[in-house]
Length: 430
Image (tube, rainbow, N blue to C red; front, side):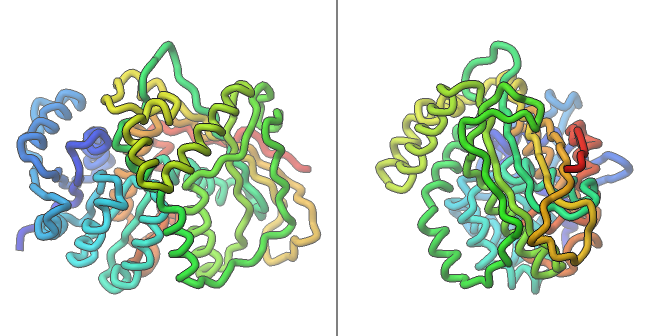
């Protein structure tokens, strides 16, 4: 039997897939590792061109020895043949609700591990319902949302597990995006916009899926968490000039799934999580609110989806467009994510229901190029964790969130070693 490659990047000719290759080339041979990898997609000619472009970016003479596999989501047999050739598939071919299941299904059939970059909640939870048991039997790990959509929150939460030194009751996230210099134009590729629109359009399906599962609720978290008032300013994170607004993000769905697993399997106490967007002015907040509400509303209807996909620049406030983003623009796009945790100095089985938190910790995750730098690093590290630290993954295969899959690995440390600043800014008693 032909020896499997360690990793195959499926969708390597797409914008995200192309940006994965430099990270994969670098990390597959770092610290004594020698991991083999290949690329897959529909067009052999385009795949060869991708390797030529990647070799110039990486600074090597040639990548012509990298294996090329032809695979098309419209041909399930070709997907099966691809997954037979890999130990881990990195799937960059979205929207995942449209094109992802055939890859997950084939990976489970062929005993191949799987990671992807999706932020589509319905796809993730539907794959868990459909394939968790069979993946468990096969001993393979299916881990979705290994990019900015979840690691923007899951990474700080894993970091806090070791840094808080006590019991957490609530964690607030404050997202502060900004652009360096005078960069203009879209900062995110159109394919990502397609995934956003398709994901938002699955609200009703997601609600029905969750209702059909009839899961036992996790206990209510006490003491309760009081949300901050919209449009207010707050100095607790050191940016007193910014106004905040609560935002719905896909991170929350992933976090809830992680917390359920940790509660049911490890007896860990869940905690409150809330996300806020930091804005410079009332005008920017009102614009974000209006556009956000309009996009969510339109995504529920077919005609609305068509409008959103036809005019991405208008409905995204210029973040997305049909054109390919300029590399300088995406590199200059930054996000500082502040995380503010409250809880108690002591840990254990104490009843905290009537005790006020007596400790707070403020930290920051700095992200450069969240969509195609941080995300591509994250999904590459996820694949490598499965290959190199398999003994630290959950004891049985299955469909897992990133935090569940990698909580016992060196995942957080690997991010930090690859120039992702993640730090505690202050610790105080209340």
